Image (tube, rainbow, N blue to C red):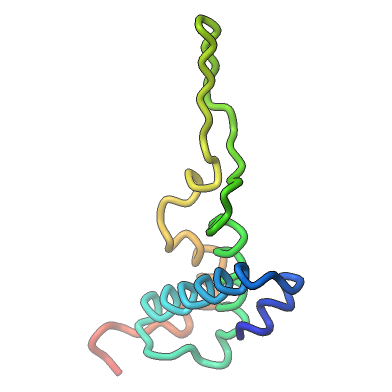
Length: 114
């Protein structure tokens, strides 16, 4: 799955490969926890890759130049406050699952049932 993800991202540098691997692992964990399964079925591999790409693109992991937006400006003694909009938008990791719930629900199992 990692190789497919890297191809979809356009072939990245070594540092980005580590981040992509982290995002893929996080994606797998989110799916396993949501569906209460121990491994990712073949049918969910593309969903897993899509979620990992979403995590990769929105996380700014390892990027020292995180885009910041002006939150407020005070003219007296010139004070400018910046805010990272990307980190603010995603408050919970499960937000990455929301666009894929229709695909994930068919694989969801009750806890304690096999």
